[in-house]
Length: 96
Image 1: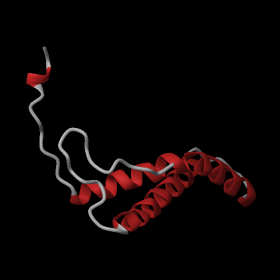
Image 2: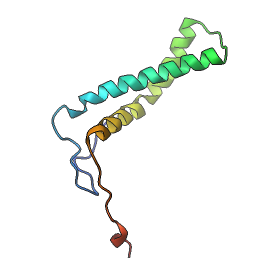
Image 3: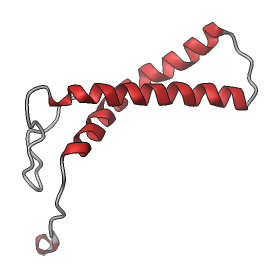
Image 4: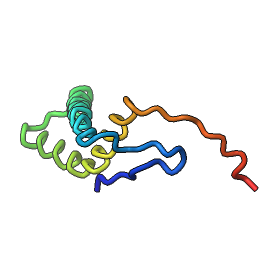
């Protein structure tokens, strides 16, 4: 889980520009976690659902734990897109 290719198969861009590059993805992951928490709490408030603090904690923790692998990958993708620019390649010659 969390492994990435060394280089892009299409353009040859290296996905590991320096050691520790993806530590910045932790900040993105934190922001995604906060957005998830706030979305759930606002939805509960709008729907006027009264639940105890324990039910809120369990109701938020279980889905977050299930989504953690996807959020980890998404945070790395978002972080990489801040710094890596991709060039559109002409693949029309590949069709035979």
